[in-house]
Amino acid sequence: MARRLFNWSLFIFIAALPLLAQDSGQSLADAARAVNKGKKTESPGKVFTGDDAQTISLGCYRDKPTRDLFSDTIEISNMTQDSCQSYCRDKGFRYAGAQYGKQCFCGDSFGRYGKLADTDCNTACAGDKQAKCGGVWANSVFQVSNSSADETAAPASYMGCYKDDSSRDMPGPLVETSLMTNAACQSKCRANGSRYAGTEGGNQCFCGDSYGRYGRLSESACNRPCAGNNRESCGGMWASSIYDLQGESHLRALGLGSAAGSSAKITEASDKDAGDSPRHPAAFAVMTWVEATRAWDVARMKSLMTPSAAALIEKIHAQDRQQIIDSYSDPQLKVVRVSPNGGKAEVTLRSANGSLLTVQTRQVEGSWKVGE
Image (tube, rainbow, N blue to C red; front, side, top):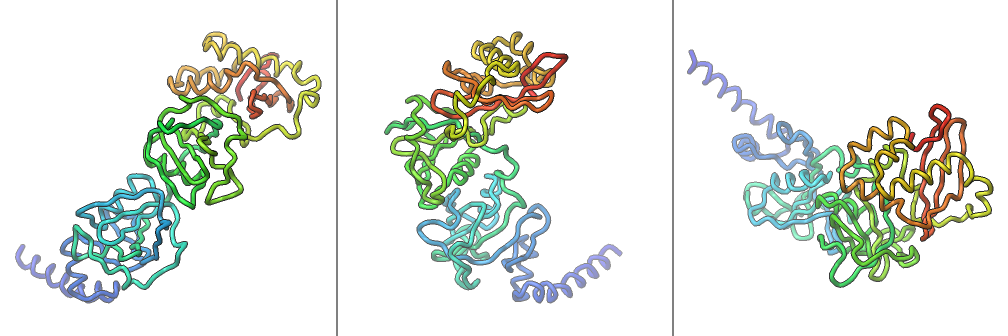
């Protein structure tokens, strides 16, 4: 009985193979080989199932020395489609590109140089001669995730302009590209597992878990337009525009943090614009809280915070604690504007270098407290 069932199963499987081949546009032998070996067929647009449910083959695309997929790259001596896809997926990227048999490129966009015929991706994978891994200046492109790491990450927070040196401030991997933007650098550093990203000279990106050993610079030193977007700045000569990739998540939860574009100079607000604002109760509460923060006097801080904000103090990690202290340690920090809104108020502070910081406040039982 068992043998009869097996024979029927084998018959049904063999009978179905022509349908598999017809569906994928491949030969019967190729389809059988793909099923028997568990390999993916290369038909563009085919959605793979099982462990790789998010992987889609998108076709063959042209590449150039300024790479189409430039966020990360690796050369794998025994590369397969799977190994390249897994590498890019694990790094948090949306797309993977296999090229010339053993090169793998990752990124969150592709196709700037146009599509090629599938026959241009004719190089066998170094680790799987039955599959194709791109060609000469040609990427076999795959979608390996429905979203990129950047889409689920907190927005990066600008920390300021910092001096660099030949003994780099951030020793992490260097990326240099004519397509550099702050977002591209942040994506690279997130994939590297780094806490901070720094753009420099308009076209360079550095990653690391600490920064600032050579000191802070005036914002005017970070004046180089990004090579990939001249509407934003990517550092300067030996000057890095530094971003915190954890996005001030704890500061935002506390109702604290940088104003939109914290590197922006005050253009409308000035000391005279503040008027009586510094004497507003919310401003007084904030400046008192700032003094307690500089000393990290937790008991005092909590007494000046809303209950929800105070509860988060216990959960703040050491590195986040230092970030908060650094944000408010400037002795020249001044209140330049208070924007009341009923029982709430947004207090705008100006640091010595002209950057803006905002602190949310709320009235609690008749007293102004820091936090949302």
